[in-house]
Length: 260
Image (cartoon, rainbow, N blue to C red):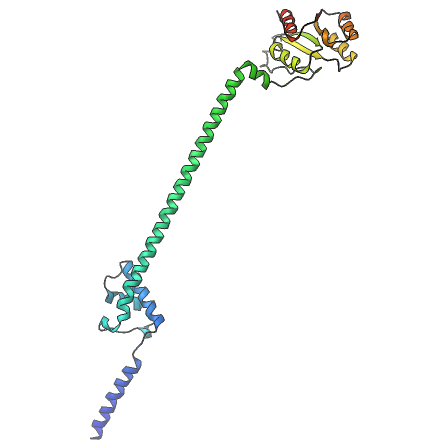
């Protein structure tokens, strides 16, 4: 009898130890298992809830793992995994939509940049055509030509250098006395290619006029803008003097005669 009593106590103690050692997962551990299982199913690593539970327990320490005979023992797992799997799929869709939107925006930005570049290029070409057309118009070309300073030597156009030994043609130099700024600009624009024009106004000194006459081939005086003394200086010079009583049109005709 004592031996049988000892066997009964041993069996009872074994059952008590099994009951005490049974693992019970905390809410945090349950959430971890649900997320690990849902992730495994989303990644196609497993295809059933039982496989997913076994896979998820690999994330747990060995002393926190359990042998589950039936899934009915973990109803929270049955309910939680599908919900978590749906959340993960929605996140994946949202991320994919964001990536697509970013790619579309990048493509649109590149297209806008290409369009802007093309528009700038076309605008530059159009502006060049407009400028060329404007320069071909005599009136606009005259307005775009800088006004020469009275008494200053007009800027001569740059020519290609002559071949060595070739003689450079010297223009006929004419002093135009009495022309106003606008008149001088018009005369330089229309006659400057044929004659070397030097302009003098009554605001300059008599000595300046005498110095300019020494190096000139002829002189044209607009008598309406000259004093008697300045007209006398022109008459007493050793070069041909052509007094003009009219305006700039008559001066131009006189210059054309000198250039021919």
